[in-house]
Length: 385
Image (tube, rainbow, N blue to C red; front, side, top):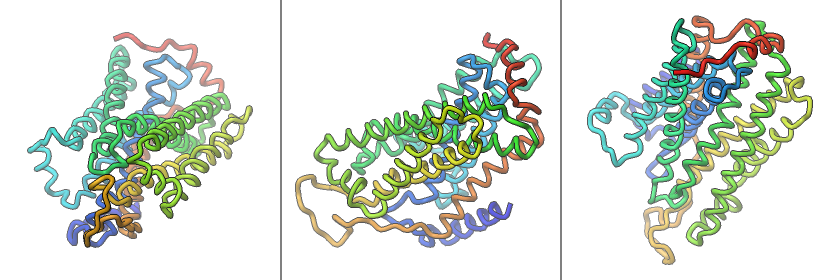
């Protein structure tokens, strides 16, 4: 709660004084709060994967935790949208953007994608928890799944459609974000599930943990593959060579964050930890692996969002341009304390929503041991509309 109060005070302070009190400037317009916001939005979409496996693909072993999947998706989506709104600088004028849509802007599209995803996910939860609504479960999860793909594509397209930034100008950013969201969302889901069960004295069976760990390993591999394809594609085009050298080799903190944070700690190490044949019995190893995935997520998004802005714009390819307005200059950026408070405040808001949902609405069953899961598998899954 203290973090949320600090978050509120920070929002009021920035709203009163403007972004000049942060480290963001005319060159780095998307700072650390945007990294936190995009992480929350991607994780929201990825967290719904468990509900999708249950109600769309008929994986009944995940049925007891499907409601938590939906709750976590809504909580992180709301927190991410709040962070985006407060980071705009004038949240009190957000109604103007809603009343005057610019449909050439991807940000305008995302208003519909965010609200639609929240609405369809809430509809899905209603079909799970309300008596007589189970016949609409497949319809609800199908709509939520389609909107989940659209939401992640829209979030990636915010950057992928930025023609002025050569690092962003790629159609691969959207599918890369879709792939990364699977890993990020499941990592958050596993940590929240384990903490919630620990707080409520609900033992999770080894079989459930094994399935989640194996699924996490697959999602990590998929995410690493798309990151590899993205950078290999950029290396193929001569006009991107300078940027790739900056991000991967000579860009100071950015190559360090990419290779050590995103690739090693956020990808390879968790993958090795989760491939143990008896991983379901190794809870501390699972916690370490999923925590590292989240650390790697922030490193990956920091490099993707901020590193691309730090690299100087190439206004005239093949020509040397000099002026007094930052031409050819690497843009420095060090996040301020206010930006860190905004970021952690967004995470705290998501956590508070999940806590309230678990406390008041009972999104988790009393038992998740292997015997309870076997009993769940014996029950038919409602898949008719």
